Image (cartoon, rainbow, N blue to C red; front, side, top):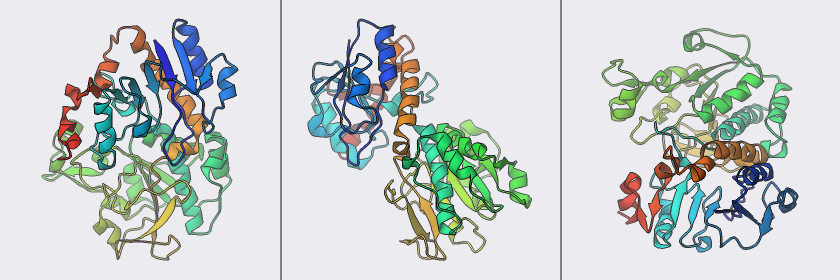
Length: 400
């Protein structure tokens, strides 16, 4: 078995990597018959020397490797035919901008394993950068609040060394008695919660959040049925929501009336209701001043997320009355943070965490005949065709 770590070629630059030097050294030790090569890179958060110092081969040519590991989409002209690739393809939701990529993967008879499709037998994702998106997204939400109201100015997350440094910066700031509503209990939501708890912000119940006045900052964390309800008002359970999302509508409006910051860390599935609507944002009693849309589904469940912002320019203003973008300094503007590659701001932390998960959940499958079906479930394409699990993408591939 020959494993190759590819150089990230997508623009803007992504400094993350699937395996740190330490994780590759561990892989080599545990599976000494495995050949590992790292493609030379001048942008990776870990230098070529850090790999070679631990006995890992660094080279400009990894075309003889069987399995190639990357983070972001591989440019079409860099794809090597007849290989197994692991990377985030951003195609499983039929993203139009990557249709040609999936077409090329099929044409080149590449076996594609998307990191998002690596799930257990209950369809729960096993690896991802979600935790770090939540950590950076929450930090950015407070940074936006400080800038909007000229209360404080803290540096970009990418200039700091890691999560502890982010928390240290935030704890030095003085916040008014604001209310923060956080959606999601997955990796993203729990990553954001790490920041809130690290700042020692008090967590309160939903009922108290909605009804009580506090003299200190507080937050509440919502699960799916806390902000969605059946149209017929019946209480059926979460599985019914997953099975019948069109039977539900958002009742998030009660939170817009009391919240100052909304941190969106939920997972948004197809046909699920819009969570924060234009009408909610236009209401005279809407109090929200900052939306940190960590999940960042453009034109999706958060009406003010009209675009993905960037690490270089993370904030923009949204004017509810006219449904348009304005400078965030506009007196009537809500500040929106919708960066779609937040973990890139903590490339070292994110790579370390990702590699640990990959070693725990994925690498064993290569050496135990995939006894838990990890690779089988994750494989999207094989021998120029979509696998049965991903046959729903056929019309997307065909451009229909």
